[in-house]
Length: 341
Image 1 (tube, helix red, strand yellow):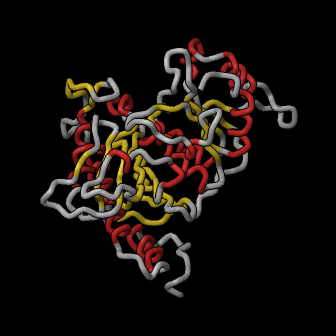
Image 2: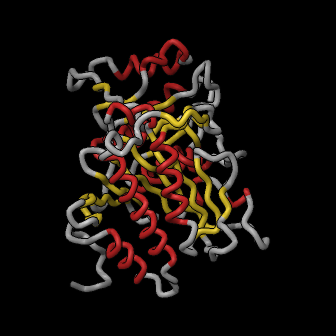
């Protein structure tokens, strides 16, 4: 096979896939490939612990609260430390930020610094950990923009449109690594018998319209009226098919988005009377998922603005999120644009 040809078959590992992409850019230094190797390693470690959490004493909470005011689960803490330890020493990253940590995470002075900024939600879906429902890790990669001797907060506060790469790992019946580096979305499945991620879902494309919606309808009482009307409209039988949209909600963003990415439809976490600015974190959840959605032919919006165009004002900023098939998101935006954002 021509080594310059884009990989399409399922026998390629994640490492080979990224290496082939690297060869398309003669000036590439290999840092990006090494970064993904370390992300994959962290994912394998976390997946191993998730699969035996009850046996490894990692169920339950630590008794601590994170910056979001949420109870820190033992697996949250384990995943957070695993990502930091796997990435801090490699020389690819100059700064990190985590949903679980108040401030940016500097690289210790004993390690070299690279040109990438990594932000992550170490373990999405914490409330599902103890009941054995799919959870995940979300990551976002930017390039450094500051010019001082040391990286700064400004390197983290970049709009999603400037992301170099984004992706997630989903820890479910199988462990998958799904990412984009700006040239489509590709999924890799972990073969635990050999410890490698193999290409299983090349060039994922979101259908223009789906058949399901995913939203926490337990919040209906605090939704603005346009959001209520939109969800009720989704449940109205279609004039052509006679069928309404089906409701699907896991409560783990990674799991809900993964299904939406593969099957189409729309996921939403709207703003409401309790969370006027939304609930999902822009930098660790909404922006990386929005890049994936757009790269797969879908869309992501706050209800009034494309997620990737939102300029973050602080590290743990929250936003409303409507994401999925392009036509379904367009319907949502048209119907909820009168609600508060």
